[in-house]
Image 1 (tube, rainbow over the protein chains, first blue to last red):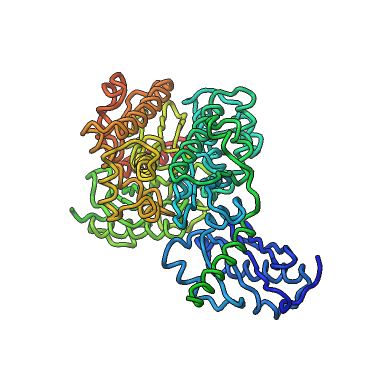
Image 2: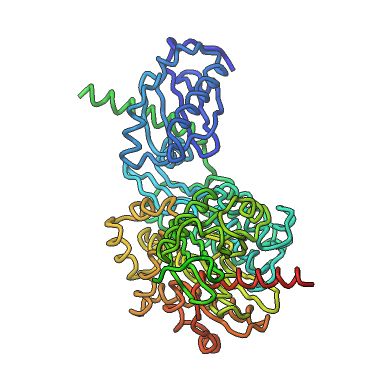
Amino acid sequence: MMAKSADEDQLYIGIDGGGTKCRATIYSEQHGVLGTGLGGPANPLHGLERTLESIMVSTQLAMRDAGLPLESIYQVYAGLGLAGVNLPSLYKKITEWEHPFKQMFLTTDLHTACIGAHEGGDGAVIITGTGSCGFSYVKGRSVNYGGHGFALGDKGSGAWMGLEAIKAVLMELDGLGPHTIMTSEIKEHFNVTTAMGVAEKMAGQPSSSYAKLARYVFDAAHQGDQIALAIVKDGAQYVSQLAHRLLENNPLRLSMIGGLAEPLQQWLDPAIAKLVEVPKQPPEMGAIYFAQQSVLEQDQKVAL
Amino acid sequence: MMAKSADEDQLYIGIDGGGTKCRATIYSEQHGVLGTGLGGPANPLHGLERTLESIMVSTQLAMRDAGLPLESIYQVYAGLGLAGVNLPSLYKKITEWEHPFKQMFLTTDLHTACIGAHEGGDGAVIITGTGSCGFSYVKGRSVNYGGHGFALGDKGSGAWMGLEAIKAVLMELDGLGPHTIMTSEIKEHFNVTTAMGVAEKMAGQPSSSYAKLARYVFDAAHQGDQIALAIVKDGAQYVSQLAHRLLENNPLRLSMIGGLAEPLQQWLDPAIAKLVEVPKQPPEMGAIYFAQQSVLEQDQKVAL
């Protein structure tokens, strides 16, 4: 990537915080993307200090990747998409952070994912990865459905599929439920033979550990396993419902994001599957659009 | 309760550890129950040190209640029923504890609950409280089904019912699921109005918090709420299945224990409901029978 001084044109950094990693992208209005950086976990609901640290790590790596001196970060507008900042208390805490940027604009990770997917425009997104959620942003109004976290929400997500698989496997191993080919696969995965063995491996595990098992559900469904098929269809039906609910807000586009977007596609309501469009840009670009739009609105207010 | 010296006849203490409390009962072979004591949480899966402390608190209170000097605890045989000691590593850790008793006999809380319910005899029990589990002890062979913990197992339990209720309420509040009268009840319970409000109240809560919501499910089911009825019937069907599975081991009696035993009764498979018999004694008495049987077997071995 080319080296640039921050003085020549306006620079932006877009930061997308996630449960396992934090992505940062440096963007120049004249030259486009200059560099990227990857940090550790940045979900403030799981730890604020860790989140701020991951933001700084990804920022510094992106600055270095762009060939920019670290001190020029003071010239850079930052857009941040973080989970949980729809909670006013958390939003306030993060805006009180003594950040190094020229100015910082904070919104939810759903919002930045949505503006990214639609390249700055209005639209809706369904996120199905470890968790699941639907979000739309139309004419300045944002709405979201689902989410709510593991295990009370996030239906159709990887963690939900993994949990349903484990439940079915334990039922079979207890002699209380029908046969599923997931049982032998899960037993092999954990190298255990009994229900107690499986339960011990999963006890107290976070949603990400359950999400890792989702591929067994899809594999078994493709082999015609009735239990796995029921899980996949139930999850996909929920995601289709989410989509229909989002469409009530008349978004211009609808995209799906996350590790389950592709494997779920074929199980969706065909009317929905046909509508889903490829995300144009990643969430960190969405964070850059958000910062640009926020600066613009601010300048317009000053001009009035 | 009457004061007794430990020298006059053999004394036993039965201890039943649980997730929220620990019960101890002092028993004399000549005079029956002499005193009882109540301690704090004693589930070694949630903390070994806390468990041992709760055992000692309940023991001391029982000794005082029996009017016995504390030092006579060295003359007392102890029977202990604790969760998780079917895991060899945990069993070993607790047997290595420098306990104050004459001798300590350790088994699972399921085992002591079962021998208690059948007054020392063989039989089977289904436990449906915060969690759920089936256990049978017949001719020296113990088997258990279900359990596995929240939220991967424990179907039909209070925590499971509460979780299913929260899922249904969130679906309705998101406009993704049918109406249930549980929604207004849960909103009022938490004094919130939105899905996010409900999710925030339950995020990261332990199974006991979910179990507290089970009464709303039964209330709504009694009012004919279709969603609540489906949850209660699904839970009760699982418990009936557990019972059928336990009956394959030909237990002499079958009892149900725990806070949901009574409210679930009317929803069970009628063939099972008819078979269920009232537990004769509580788990701490089961722990006493277990200690007595263990001493007897030991004496017989010595005599051979």
